[in-house]
Amino acid sequence: MPLPDGLEMSALASCEAGAVLRISGELDHCTEQLFRASIGTFLDRGHRHVVLDCAALTFCDSRGLNCLLSLQWLLERRQGRLLLARIRHNVARVLHLTGSGELLCTYPTVAQALATLPREERPGWPRAGSLEGTGTYPSGPSGRAYRSGSGYPSGPGYEYRSGATPA
Image (tube, rainbow, N blue to C red; front, top):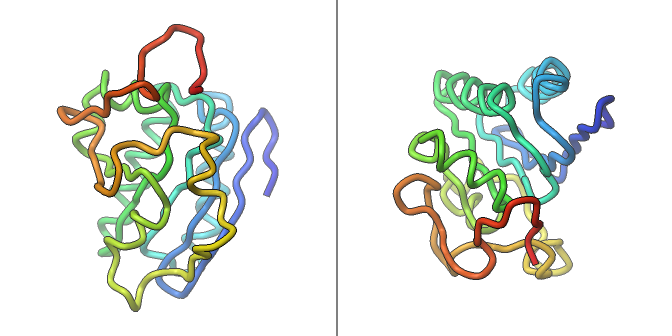
């Protein structure tokens, strides 16, 4: 569902227990209320697990980070989880610098994030033809989940370059 001020959220897959949502644009002080309202729509459907595909999330400030932490808190109260997948280096850097990477679980791909959920609570996920692994965004360490805090990913796709986007 397109939202004003440069934020867009769409459902990629869902089941009774969870959903995979793509978030794109900017999650900041201008869009936080819109994000909360939009995510509320999915939570009202009973989803306890949310995987956010963040490959197209271009910016996240402290207010956006607060949205993510609040969502995680709410999902944990419902015996669920918030899983972030395919985060870009600039968003990963915010998580790292604020210490939030110790609280938010991040994964190189949506499939790897989904694999951490009980099989009966996973939304169906397309393996062939999915947008993952296209090389458009860095995917993180191969084959393992990571937290953005002390184990902050490194390598050519994760260099800190002011104003630069991933290669």
